[in-house]
Length: 159
Figure 1 (cartoon, rainbow, N blue to C red):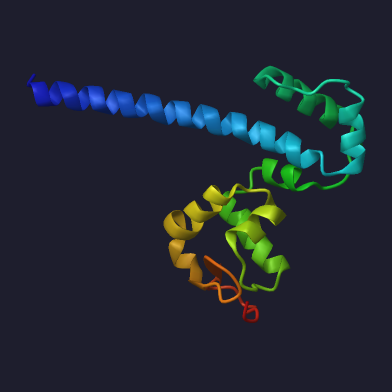
Figure 2: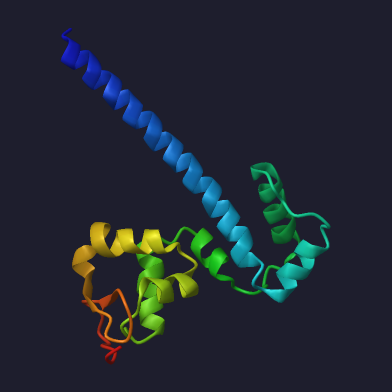
C-alpha cells in the first residue's frame, strides 16, 4: 500500500470520526434548544421552575425534558420544539413558516424566531440543500437578504 493510500484511508477515517462528533454535538444542541423553546410556554416554565435547579450537564438537560414532558397533559400546548421534535425536516419547518405567513419575504432571523431553528441551519437549507426551492434578494428595509419559497402558490408582498 502506498503512502498516499494510507494517508487517504487515515483521512477518510478522520473525517468519519469528525462527522460522528458533529452528529453527537448536534443532538446535544437539539436537546438544549428543545428545553429552551419549551420554556416559552408559561405552564412548562412553571414545571421547570418547580425543579429548583438549572440543568448544566447533558444528563441534567435530558432529565429536565423528561420531567417536563411527563407533567404536561397529552393535550398540552403545541410548542415549536414539540412540532420539530416530531421529526419534521428543517425544510418542512421553513416551508410551514412560509405557508403560515402567506409566503411573504422574510429574513433568516424572522424564520428562526418563529420555527426555533438556528439561523445557520436555515441558511444551509436556503443556500445549499434546497437552494432551488427559494428565491432570494437584497433586503430593501435592512441589511442582508430576504427570501421566500419559489413554488408556493401564495406570493407575498414586498419587504
